[in-house]
Image (cartoon, rainbow, N blue to C red; front, side):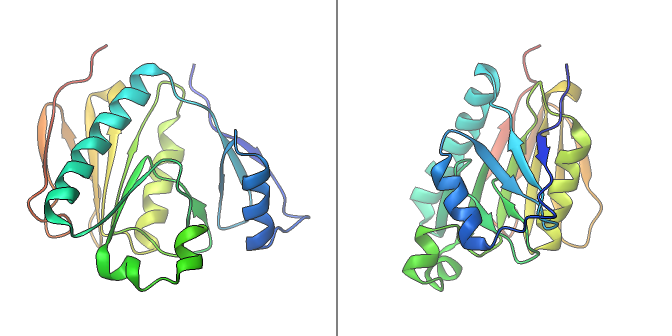
Length: 193
């Protein structure tokens, strides 16, 4: 059964950035995001297959980054305060070293006020595709340079780039980090049914 995240409409109770941060800290067991309109999204947990895929792809990104030392890699537990106003948590993200070091120590320790340079999202069995596509477009609007949306249900990956329409590739395929993640390659096989 496909489901969307539970949306709490707090339009009459606006949370400041600090209140949102404190809400997340007080509710550590919840996966929470906030849209630029101020709606809270409670994200459902993922199952074993999705969790494994997410980590495996993240490991590949982390190994590449350890070898190149070009930036910082972040897990799905990291919330980014996007320039467009949303507070989002991609399944994995990467930020260039110089952009990361331009943040203050406090900004690095809380929800970093920066759009990652690269993000990926992995659709789980319970995710509807439309909200994930909207999230990818929001990332681009906020400055993300490259994004991958893995869609096991359709055996495809969608590639998002600045000033381009999403490119859809059937699996298996080889992905390139292009100019954003120089030298990064990811071979993606068909997802098990």
